[in-house]
Image: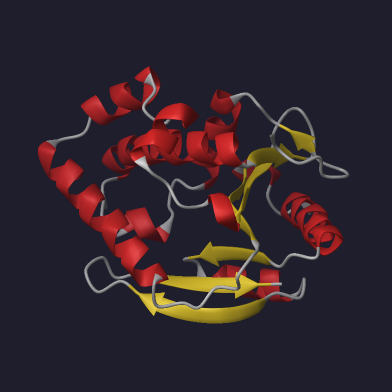
Length: 207
């Protein structure tokens, strides 16, 4: 069951969450280097979001400032982050929509996606995480609503919730330009890892 977070609304409509995240992450570095063609990248991104958003919403929750879901965050307790085939099944990660997205990918795109996410998992093993924490697996605001304080308001509510639970908030970004935004809210860097194959970095932040 998802937590109740003051000032935020739990969004249970998976399609609404995915549409917002697709809009927010169309040029995200982790995928941009591996899939330079934007039209193909969006197909791969849809498959990834359908898979992982379903998992995050089942074992954590998706939260927004308003029902329109102009910006959304998926928050997951650290003890529930580790996936398995059975957990993915019960989360609905293998939905018909996910399978349709996957069917549009080429064999080469399947191979690259598998290598990419395997490397991301390996990169994470280089970072020492606290014993318990709250993990923001996704945080995105639709482009037309960016620059209006929506991301900051969303983050503030999540941070307040973490403080109430006496648990640190952990997140990862591949955008160095986003780091000052998080630092302005008191986040500190845990470390940085680099992709050897796909030429991006992951910056791990904690508050």
